Length: 72
Image (cartoon, helix red, strand yellow):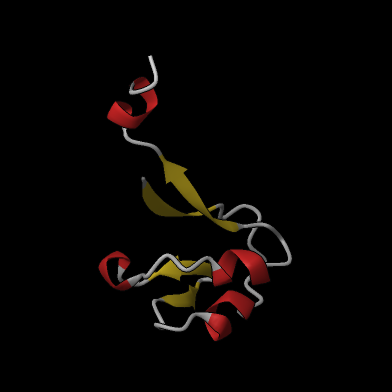
């Protein structure tokens, strides 16, 4: 399964809590909204998702097509 960091900019209030808690410092606040600086360096730990009070950032989990069809 792959994970992707998703940011809902309309929900972000730019508080910076996710930026402060990011262990690899790949988040920043730009123009009052959180931005992902370097997707390749993101370890997809989910701390930003846990700390965001506005639910504006989350990890989307995508299952491989093969694993979904494996049980058929």
